[in-house]
Image 1 (cartoon, rainbow over the protein chains, first blue to last red):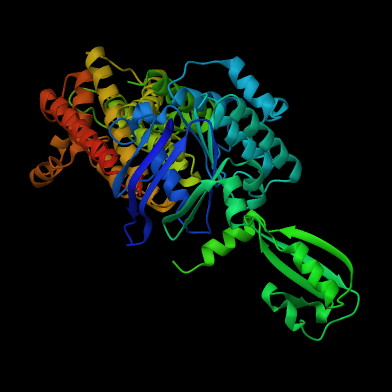
Image 2 (image 1 turned 135 degrees about the vertical axis):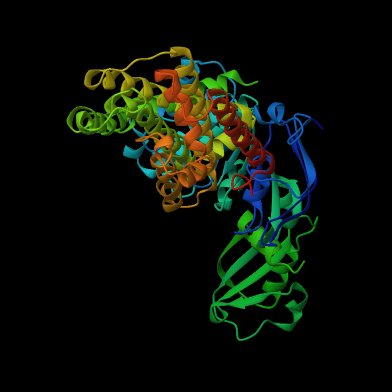
Length: 308
Length: 253
């Protein structure tokens, strides 16, 4: 595996004694979109900030492109772009100047054509001479992304990039992320909108209480931990589930008008055909039926709430 | 060395100065010129000469020093405190730069502003009083050394401060009294002996004395001692800045 980021035994205890990260190990493959999910205070931002050099690790190490983030920080940091969670912007500066500043800070020689391309891709070109204080919150978020892209990073951290942005901007942002992926940029994102991770990510990592509790390909995770449910809307309400159907562990909902069967998507035999046969035999008739699959959000909530 | 980063920080900071030209340049020049008008032209003629120099001319070096010390501290402390306050400091901390580039960029820009302010005040003073400049290069050396060392001091202050009050408390409560009592308006030799001895513990005395020597060739202390004190203060500030970035004090948690 060609890792762009390799984190080993990384721990962080803040001065107040709070243990934000506990022995974290993580490999990020070049070119992937990795979604790091976790509840508030799980350690997502601390992990990102350590790799970027904003927070010092208590122990452990991280390599970016094989360069140690503390001993070879220049080589490590020059390929990283960071879009932070908050909106720290140079209020009085113009969009153009702030992006040019970012590019120079990362050691790149001026390249107006590149800045122009980045601003256009984020629909910021007509705002290039505006002072940042005049922009809306969503626009400021775009400026932060433009700043992070101004030096052509190979590894981009997006910390809650779609917090507080409207639907249109969110879609524009994901279009940019897709384009970045196509151009070979590795993206690590944290988000509260798990549907986004479900839509975008190649792999998902779940962090809780400073520990990585799971890292997996998104598709296999969905398949492995995802449950499917068959819901039958009954013709007549049932008082109780007929005893011959007890093996199916059915659940009665909606005052007996809805019968729910939960089955495993991995099983070769889901038992649906047999169940339908037995329902007919028991003279349980239904008007309608539909199936539903648990979302990444359900899986996430299930994993995070599970006792460690 | 990341020269592009130094260039970027320097340009960014200089652009900020030109955007706020009234506050950065006009205000200190105007307030210092008022001293020339009042003490030089208006009441200076009624005050006796000091060491053969008219009072109006005598106070010029001290006033230039007073202005550049105050400007250096406020410029550079604000330059680093404001990004900390707004959070934009994250970008500097995450950039491939060492503290050397950060300091050269921020302190270099702030010191440039101070030197510009000092030179404008010097030029303005010529309109109000007759000034003799005996050693222009020594004068420039003091101007640059003082600007750089007080900008470094301001930089440290801007990192140490965790509120706007702390940012202003040191210039007002420490630097201002030290400068006023450091011989801006009088020669130390005019004080009673005990106060002369006490004054020698005030580092600003050495700066003003050396700077005034470059104009009129008279000084309260040896010019070499003045240069040594200024360089010593500069090195001390550099060591503190180095320690701040090595330990991440108030910058990296």
